[in-house]
Image (cartoon, rainbow, N blue to C red; front, side, top):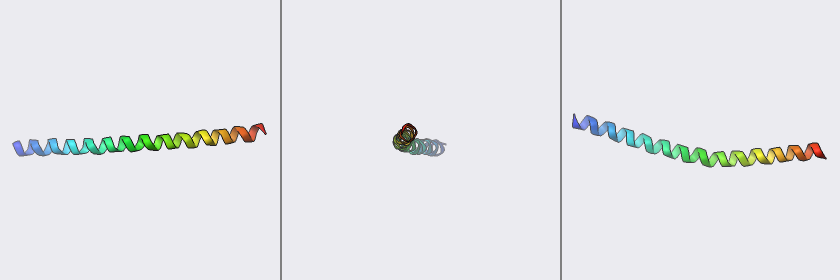
Length: 50
């Protein structure tokens, strides 16, 4: 019984680490995506106001 509990706790901790890594990656990619959208919007406005 102790072994099963130990395995479950280990699996939960490992999946939590993977989830945290995914959150950090998504946050980093989100900043890049936002920059691209802002630049695209600025180009659109520049084209329409010329």
